[in-house]
Image 1 (cartoon, rainbow, N blue to C red):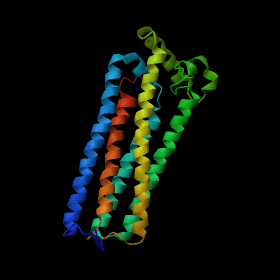
Image 2: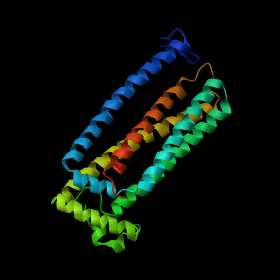
Image 3: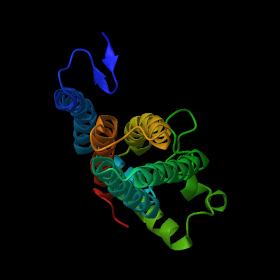
Image 4: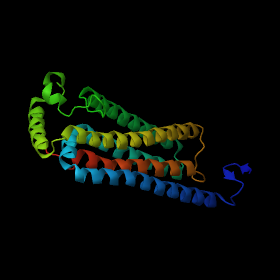
Length: 245
């Protein structure tokens, strides 16, 4: 296989090469839909069986942090779309700027998830031997990041959930297993996306992308938008459904 400029030897034209790359990316994204779809289906089935435990788990998440991260990812989709547009119209400086902004927003998302994960470890909400859905209720002095009003509501919800599900603590671990599993896999895809953005930035600074050839920007754009769409589904599933506060 040889390559002449941007054109690989198995293709006759850049248009044919881009169409092939686009088809390949869409096939890959379909497999990703099936992958995440299976996990979301398993979550939905378990939520139906252990309704009280999953509802309680949802109530322990920070709605503000989840909503903020949703806004961050929506903004990153916009900047990524602008990077694609800039590459198609030959605005080389704007390509670099929008790619850098997209990467920056991705790191903001990671920072918020780090805060959320840290809170879950601090509140003993990580599945395992130390998991205790009642930890903050029993040790309010060690959970001072939860306001008094929110703690009162959480205690009331814990009482209701315990009455509905005597094995609440064990079943709540299923919720958090799903939470860490789904958000962790999503974060892994974000890490891959960040690596691809760094690669695009390097090429963009070298002036590689033009209206004639911008296929890599288009393909990474499709991938990034898919990752953002996955979060649009994860946010209501994990943070909003059955929430009481």
